Length: 87
Image (cartoon, rainbow, N blue to C red; front, side, top):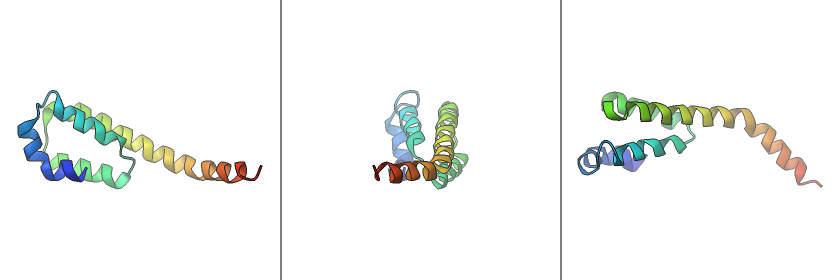
């Protein structure tokens, strides 16, 4: 994300808005951080690209889902791992 953020103008010039750029935006969905999601929302609110708005929305939804899953399952999963180690 840091690279994309700092290099965004150059990426827009170099990559096609209908091929390369959507792939980059889609990859942001693999970040599992509420903080990063807010940064990305704020960044693209200042630098909107209509051609990628749907891809951005899907990526942000993936991030939100990951954050929610982590919050919901981290404690039970950690407990399961702890118990599994005692057998």
